[in-house]
Amino acid sequence: MKKYILLIAIIFASCAEQKQEPKTAGYFILDEEQTYMIGSDETTDFMKKWIDAHNERDMETILSMEKDDIKIELPDGSEINGKDEHSKVLESSFFANNVTWTPYWMLPYTGVKGNKTWLIGGFQLKSNVDGVENVVLHMGDIQLVDGLVSRIIVYEKQPKKK
Image (cartoon, rainbow, N blue to C red):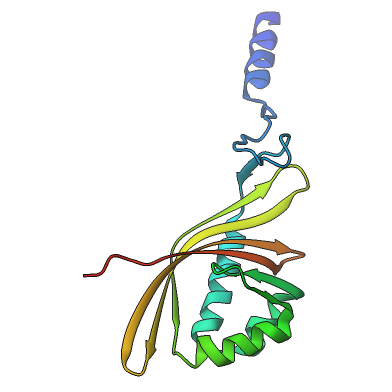
């Protein structure tokens, strides 16, 4: 009987969930203790809704998903600061040039130290100005704070001409 009790105890002990530290990777040159781990698909879903709102020209939804002090750092070194400035740029450029924004990859990640939420992704932006179609590829590093878009760093690449 004691052997059976011991056997059952061993089986339960081996089946108990082992607490493991999350697997992290990477580094940040300004903070050598910083590492990153894969984030939540909820972040990806949120970003898809924000992108859809751009393509639907739904300014109210776009702005409701952003921090008041949103900062967007563009490839040419210029910046968009705040919701008001962002809405003006969208109206005068993005919407006026009939831009469509298509994500082709996204990866949410979290900075372990400070628990900061980010998403990095690749995006195709297609516009039509005076009947001429233009395609630009962007990669964006997008930070969310309190569940809202707070900061975007945009990198740009021109695709090969066909």
